[in-house]
Amino acid sequence: DVRIPKENVLLGEGAGFKIAMGAFDKTRPPHQAVSFLLAERALQVSLARLAYQRAAWEADAGRRNTFFASVAKAFAADVANAAAADAVQIFGGCGFNCEFPVEKLMRDAKIYQ
Image 1 (cartoon, one colour):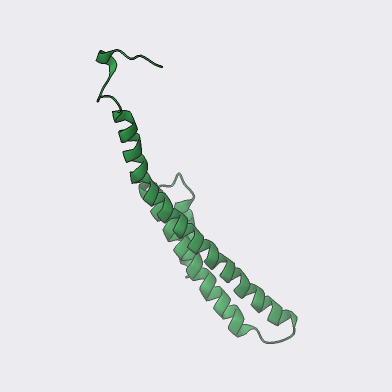
Image 2: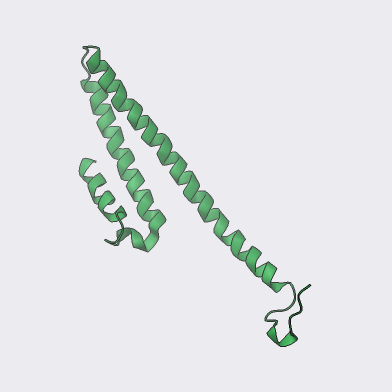
């Protein structure tokens, strides 16, 4: 058991646990939202990889791959732009700060779109 003098108790007995749980409940949904964003982008990156691999497979087989290459390039550019925009959103105000690479990734992704 721990004894704390009454003059050192700030908000009453058991208030610390309530404050901690209140802070925990407020931070959990944003983390879940970030997880959903990252999962969606990971799925799209995998699809973009499959698209360019299909274009390469068509070329290796000696067939015309212009359609598949165009689809892969357009889709990958959109995925890169969406991923960069999400990264800026996740970083918040620091997303446009030159200290982090997110700002440069956003500019680079816009070039290909």
